[in-house]
Length: 156
Length: 96
Image 1: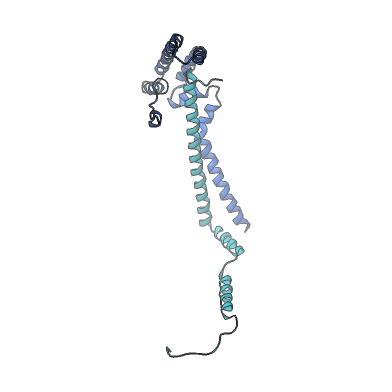
Image 2: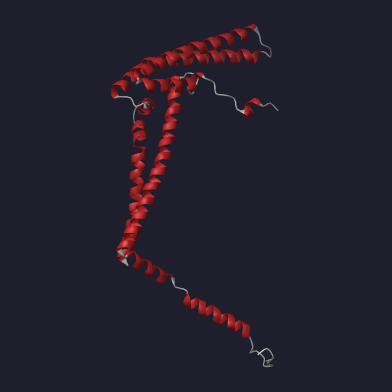
């Protein structure tokens, strides 16, 4: 009876050991990325199969791009605040609102040009096919607007 | 046989007694919990059964671990992908 109990518990422990080991194995790359100071860039390295040298170069490029990105964020926030304040004051499109909208569009164009420049630099560091894949994905995520669904286009 | 008739009356509570005897006969045939456990224990003592039991549980553990691991892995990948886009696109960067 004792031996049967030992076999019963042993089997259950074997199942737990099998679960833990395969779970740890399957999540190992992602867990190691999460422990890095910039997990998003480690994800990029894994996703686009970059070498250590390519990864280091992309980290440098990102370090150079980051201050510009922060500056653009501030400009966007200031622009949005200005537009919100103008919109709150009136219920017609005034020349000031037109001017603010034109400035917002100009700022977006400037930001997008900066982004694209960074994306091109990053893609050039990658192997050719991976670079193309990266560029296509980034354009889809940042520049190409997602199509409106039927629910969004239908007005009731 | 078809012409045979009897006037004898049934004893009192005849039907109830019949059902009681049927129930007690069925109960006598049902194995007790302890007997089932003993039977299972004896079955596990067989090397072939013990090996099969261990292998099946190991397989279940590995399959479940693999599935859960893949789900978790995909979830982390998806989060990192979104965070990368937010990191490089000022229009998608979360504002405080």
